[in-house]
Structures are given as C-alpha cells and as structure tokens.
Image (cartoon, rainbow, N blue to C red; front, side):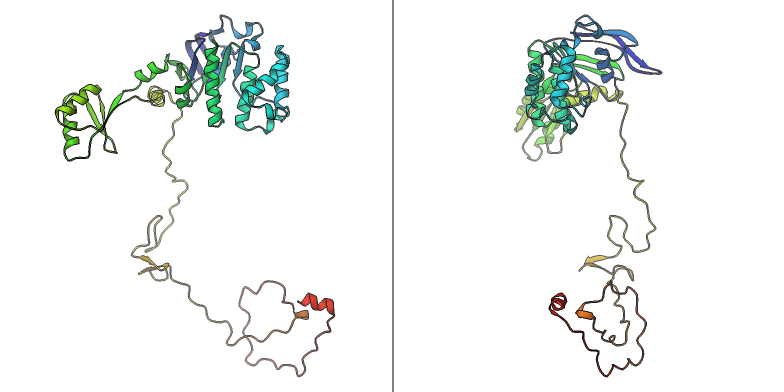
Length: 410
C-alpha cells in the first residue's frame, strides 16, 4: 500500500505539492488525475524517492522507498519511456536492469513476451516508435514481478490494440492483489480501467473516491425524452414537466433533456396528457464531464480563440475589387470572367501587336540541321530594315556528311 501524509514539495518560491494525503490500496486500479502542472509527476517522483519532500512523508508498505530491501523487486515504475540508452537493444536494456537488481536473466525473455517485443528484442531502442518505447518501459516495470506498480501515462503512443492490452494488464495485476497506481489524461480510458480515483489540482487534493461516486457527485443525471413530431404534443408535455418542477431543455434533434424528475414521474405525466413517448431513457454524465466540472477552477493553461489577425493583413482594396471571401462588387461570374466589372478588372489580356511589319527573314541553316542553342529572346528585337538584304547569288554549299553525321542530324 502507498500512503502519503501531509506531502509537500517546494521549488524555491513555487509550491508544486501542498499538504497532500491519500492512500493507494492493493487489489484495485487507482487512477491519478489532474490538469497539467498539478503536481502528479512530482508526487510520483517523491513516492519513488527521486525527489525529497519539503514536508510530510510518503511510504510504501510502511517504509520510504529508499529504505526498502531490494526495492526494484518490490516496486516497478514507468515514469519516462524515453529514459533508455538508444544504442542498446531491448534485451540489453532489460539485462542491465536485471543484473543491477539481482533478477535472473531468463526473466528478461519472459517480460519481452508479455509486452509483445520478443520479435524486436535485438533491435536498438533508438529505432523504436513511441508505442514500442512504452511497451519496453512497461517490461522494465514488470521485470522484478513487483507488488507495487506505478505508471505515468502508460498508453501514450499506443494503438487501440495496445490500449486494450494495457487496460487488461492493469486489471489483471490488480486482481492478483497488487497495488496499481496509474496517471493518465485519457478520461475515457480511466473510466474503463480504474476502480478508484485520486484527483489533485494545483498540488492539492480535490477528490479521493470511487469512480462511480466521483461521477455522481460532480454531475447531474438527466432523462432523455422523445415524442412523435406531432403539432402541440411536445409543447404540451414541456409545459406539464415544467409545472411539475422539472427543468426542460430542448435538444437540436427535437428531444427533451429533463432534470429534476424521476423517470416514472415523467411517464405518468405523459400518460395523463395522452402523449406518446418514443424514448424515455436515463443518462449519466461521463467521467470526462465530471472531471472537467471539478477541475475547472484548477486549470493553469487555457487557450483563447485564434482570430488569425496576425496572419491576415488588410491590403488597400480599390473600388470594385473583391474583399477576401466575397465576390467582386457588382459582378456576376459567368464563363470565367466577371460581367459588369470595373474597367480593366478580370478582362482577358489585350492582344499585343506584332513587333514586325512582316515576318523576319528566314534564318540561315544551322550546321547539320540543328536548332540554335539557348532560349528565345525575352525582349523585342530591333525593327527590320525597310528593304531586306539581297540574298547571295549562290547559296553556300552544305558540308559533306558521312554516315555518322547523318545519324546525328536525324
């Protein structure tokens, strides 16, 4: 069992954990929840003796971690999956941990099979994906077959199959009588995995209770009522429910969310009014909704709406030009060009006149029939003379071509 009493940790003027007291009992999966910066990782580090508390104490089985005999075989932990030498293979990493803790080498292959890394045991860990690194970290926590296990975000980077595997692993370890303490931000996963919750905010305890009690105390149940889409039926039932003391909130799909009344009472009122019910079902808030409601005042980092003002610079638009996201003023798009647009806007380019009054003279034949090298001139050539030069009386004789030159010309 893990027990914290008055646990406090200060870093200079900042208090990360203040007067925190709780118990993590064996046989159950205890979820450790809290916003970013609430002190969860600091608390786990103090449990493992990595940080000394400024006040109070935390014990495992009645003793501080540093006083436990052969602590690695009694406590397993995963705090940082990246804390692995990248040049070592998965098997070498676990062998080092086993030798430091006096654990037989055959246990390494056993845990590699448990976490599903037996086929990549000889690969260097620097080539592992985030999910594979998480599996290797879990293997290190299970190496000594400990009675107490601490996991910080164990499903981070895992695929759905891996998340299901971790969930079943946690519950199996707890069913064997072990103490399992899991920190996570995935509320939906905690709702399926944890039996008990410890919630902190800004270093202080907010809740220490079962998952069921946590949801019921931090949320309000409601009934979902759905009636046929007939004139006046929904309005008549809404009025009767409100007069009976219920709070009725219409949903976008036409259903009614009713709070303050039990389901039998809602059914009796509908029967008295001769209103048919297509749906009358109880609904309970999720763990995520209850958690958000409780920790709303303990969140340190809140996002604001991104107006993108820093990226969109307003350029001076002339009369008749389109504003961003709007069609041109007084224009109608047809055939690819706006009609009735200001002069010069969106019209086809004006055909430029020819640079020559008459086609230029036929260029001289190039040797071997090849085209002149280089791109065409990008600017207008000088105007041709009024009278083209007289052609020579005798054209220059073409050079003689052999068979190789003829093939090159082709």
